Every structure is written in C-alpha cells, then in structure tokens.
Image (tube, rainbow, N blue to C red):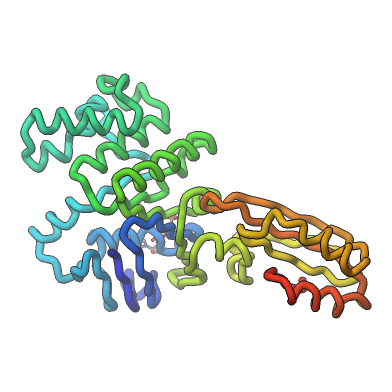
Length: 318
Ligand SMILES: Nc1ncnc2c1ncn2[C@@H]1O[C@H](COP(=O)(O)OP(=O)(O)OP(=O)(O)O)[C@@H](O)[C@H]1O
C-alpha cells in the first residue's frame, strides 16, 4: 500500500531523511519511532504529500506522490485521514460541527453528513457530546473527535502524529484500543508516529526506528523487542545491571514458549543451580514475550550454552 525506496529528504543542505526504504502493507498498524528530531514527522508529511522529497520512490497505492498534480493531490489527500498531538479542533464549533467539516468542504449533502457524523460519534463513543464545545471535553475526548473527523471521508489510511503524546497513560490506552478497533472494523492502514515505546508495544505490528534520519531498526514489533540489538537497546535506554563475576546469560523467550519452565527444566536436567539475576515479561502487540538473565559459574559455561543451543531459545552472553 505504501512503498518507499531509497528516499532522501533535505532541508536546505541538511539531510533529514537518509535512504529510507520501507513497505507498509494494507491493513497494517505501522509505527515510526524515534527521538525528537529523528525525522518522523517529516517522513509522515512526505507520505501525505505535504513535503516534497529530493529523490527516491514514494508510492501510495502505486502512485508516486511527488508526480501528483494539484487536483490529484487534493483527491489523494481525501484518502488519508490525519490526527495530531494537539487535536487541531476548532474551538468555536461543536463536536458535531468539527466532525462535519471535511464533508462540508467536499460539498456533501446535509443528510449524508448527519448520518455519517452520527455513525462516527457512535463509533468513537461520543454521542452524548455532540453539542459540546472542545473546551468542555477531556484530552481523550478531543482526540476521539479528531479521530471521527479524520474518518469522515472513508480514508484507506490514517496517519497519527504523536496522537497520544498529550494524554495520560490510561487515556493513551483507550485511544490506542479505539485505533485498533477502527483498524479491525474498517480495515484502515494506520501509521503512527511516536517517541513512546509503550505505544509501539501496545499497538504496532511493525515498526521503523529512526535516528537522525537513518533507519536503525525495521522489523515486526515482537522481533524488535524480543532480542533488541545494540542500537535498539541504546534507544530503549536499557542498562543491564549484572553481577561482575561468573557468566551472565540472557535468554529471550518468544511468545510460543514463554511460559515453559525452561530454567527449572535446565536446572533439573543439568543438575545445577542458577542464580536468576532478573527477568521480565511484557505484552507486545497482544503477545506475551519475556527475557531473563541467569548468572552461572565460569566452569559451567560450555555445558549450559550447549544445553541452551539444543533448545529453541534466543540467547546471548552479556
Ligand atoms: N520546515 C523545516 N525546515 C528546516 N528544517 C526542518 C523543518 N522541519 C523539520 N526540520 C528539521 O528536520 C529534522 C527532522 O524533524 P522532524 O520534525 O521530522 O523530527 P521528528 O522526529 O518528528 O521530531 P519531533 O518528535 O520533535 O517532532 C530536525 O532536525 C528538524 O529540525
């Protein structure tokens, strides 16, 4: 659905996107992740045709964005909904009027608008707030209005630029659940720009990690978190505090065998005791994955590693 190949983007002489190649499939929930200034919003704006790019290919539904003429671009943007961190609602208009706006601009009939807006109010759970003004709503409710407004023209793609960054964790979860529901019900492709790893874990099926305009990771979300490489660890700011003596082995448990009692089985079969240094389980994209660090004596290293190798376990020595 969105195919990007060798994309470069400059502001004056500064390269802000360097050789970006990614594919986003129809119906996917895709996250673009990075710290401030990484180029996330720029990439999102290239996707919806708001920014030009120097070279490379950027196809949406097989159309090269930079070749679109003005009226084609207008039609193209109709197919893309967008929501923002600060909601971008019109303060002097009611919820109903805010949601109606895109349809009004496109000249839809009053009855059509009314039906669509009421359906969307039901979808986002705000039927009772249709006559309220934005100032009378919570942050989460404002974002629900923005989501409804972004869906009025039945877009195939929804772009979310830091859509939960101004919200508390519980409200973030409820908005992410709503986005998931929309993705499933309407089969809309969702591209989320965020600097929050929690958002990626909760919702994204695939993620792109950007740093200073460069790709430092691009994979299924579970893979990225299951065994983070050095760049990903740096990004996550994970510091691994482990004992200075012995050998520290980190074991990664993918979803299928996370609950298998691997450590106790290994201890029993090798007739050894292990020092469990730390471990954690977390839910990523609806699956439980986990990792654990064990500390073993130097002289048992080969036996333990041999044993781990014989099993379907991802591991590393720290
Ligand atoms: N219109 C512009 N003119 C010049 N430089 C820009 C412009 N917009 C963004 N930049 C620069 O491009 C780089 C990428 O910015 P971008 O906004 O895409 O980053 P981001 O990852 O979305 O960051 P944030 O999360 O802070 O919004 C930054 O160095 C920024 O200063």
